[in-house]
Image (cartoon, rainbow, N blue to C red; front, top):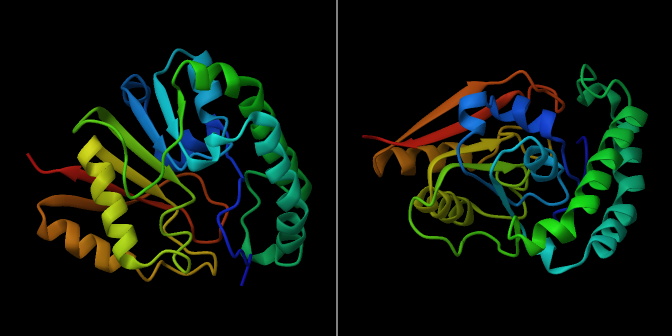
Length: 228
């Protein structure tokens, strides 16, 4: 087992990681994006600076930036220590070392914290959580979910996963989820159930390889679109 976590932790990724995790093209980035369970990622902060329209949703946003940073500080040592004790479970082409991973995560949350209060006032960071989102049908072209669904398969059952993804599909014309492995580095036990259910509802589900890989064999995302 690579990392043992009892609850969802605030461990955000960068804009560059999002682009690689989700295979985002410039054309796709130009569309309105809803990023769900975004935590302290810097995707919104960096993307906004580049002129993109991103809204992030997370229950964590009921706290202020300092409180969110405190929650990150409370868990980062434990996570890095667990990674250091399971080096072969990870691919080091992106972060290079546990120290590099920590540096990248600290850089992401620093950018997030610098942007958060202004972004929250502008409505770019909104309090909310799956499986219910407070947005109209098809309000967004693209919905993203990084390191929550499927990763926390032990904490959230298959019904939650299906309900959560259906809600994202109500709000977004297309949904992408990464990674498809759980914390044990195994394919999520909910993946087949979710894909079968969504296909029966008329959605097209495709598992696609991406250039980003940190969990070993964790280089695939699920892309879900409405069939025309």
